[in-house]
Figure (cartoon, rainbow, N blue to C red):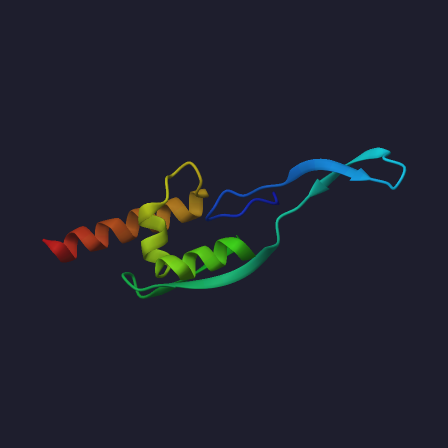
Length: 97
């Protein structure tokens, strides 16, 4: 299982541990991933995602899962999130018509 946020695309970063003597050794910075269940208002369903803590705050700030999926590009989303985005878009266009 890869360590990538399903909603933001945030992954691991590479950097250095720096000692007091300024010796540098490679290390990785992993995102703070959490397994969460998010509710889609349009579909009235629950969906499970593996989301970073900062990504979860961003989803709440934008106004929920539906708004986040519709404004985010497909390149950042996982395959599962793209399927949900397509279903939400389809439901909203049907409701508008």
